[in-house]
Length: 62
Image (spheres, rainbow, N blue to C red):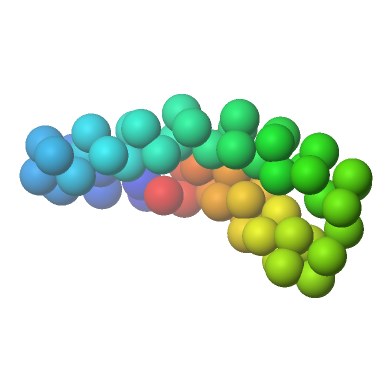
């Protein structure tokens, strides 16, 4: 679905969607390392959001 949806967006929105997609993996890795070193409730919640966002991009749902 997202393959067709992305082309209907304005060019500036598509650009930022691609930037977020490319940056999600390094942010997720950093957050997972941070969670392993200093596990707090906020870090666990943020790690879950990062992993969820990464898989949404990976499965092309966004």
